[in-house]
Length: 464
Image 1: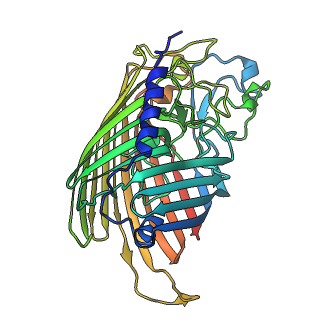
Image 2: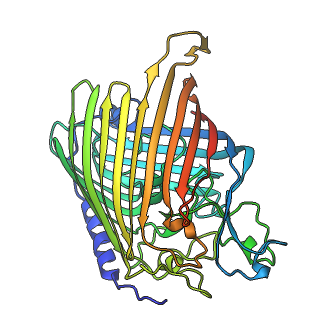
Image 3: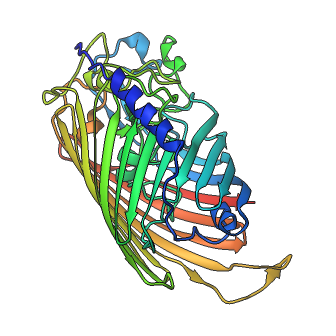
């Protein structure tokens, strides 16, 4: 199937010009301080501040072994030796010890008027996207901000505004995460950063946000720790035997590959309400938001010969298998968020309704976490041993409302998914934490039978 994209180059150039113009002039700053210890808080007192951070994560991962047959007519040479059909398989079943990332964090701020942030990952095993052959060094975030962006659930004392430009997370994303894994909604819709500009205006209890960004390309990945390999160079060999399997995949918004805004921008808007007490013990934040863009005919992605957006939805070029419901090139999401803070309790919920070129699906996710301090039992080098514990539970669900092509190589796109994550984070000493969690990842096959692909993950995080 061939589709022609709209020509929005003039629109992209206009937004870039607006961003440059706004960055050249002053914006009002929100009065609320950033969290204690940040570069922004120090800058509000001393004029300028710079902060450097280093984080290392090591894991023990135990993934259940599962595989589910697909009907796509792969040629014998395209299958592993002795295999007569293809399967969706657990990416890397069994028990494994691995280092997933080494992260450098850089932050700078000047008074309440300017901030800059960069997050650079090395190794990046769990966020290599869309496959393991993606780059091992990745600039996750890199942005400049003029003006002051109020934290979630924080009421500003006076009017303010900000403009942010670069590569950053979407404004509806849950950034105060309590588990190392991701729910189905956060995986599918806003796990990865986008690039462009974002603006916000704080009006005390009410705030508005808007963005113009490149838009994350649509691709596929397993919702567990490893994305899975699809279309990597190993699959070009006769009778391929890749080390990592395909995964049991869902449609998701993959990471952008570069900062080129392209011809079609994704436009986003949100309006929210905040409430909270002066002591910071209670906070409430409600946000309604939406995004929209046109899907590209194809998007080239590093590490795979499959294309993103419509190219992926159409199926393999030599044997297209589009859903009977596939129509048009519109990508639209509408959703709502709730953040609630009460002492050590945190609750987050998000609902999303999406239309993806005629393919409809909805998602819901909710997380409850409780962090509390532990009594002093000992100290190491002047730091308390076991200072806190934080149990958390997260439930998430994806409900696709479209049909598969009978021969699709990715039948799991249209399966109903539900995921329950249970975990606990324990402080070892200041800067070192251990998180242990279990993912119950279940779905309903096209036949109506229920199946699962569960995983246990233990994460040791050290941060300087």
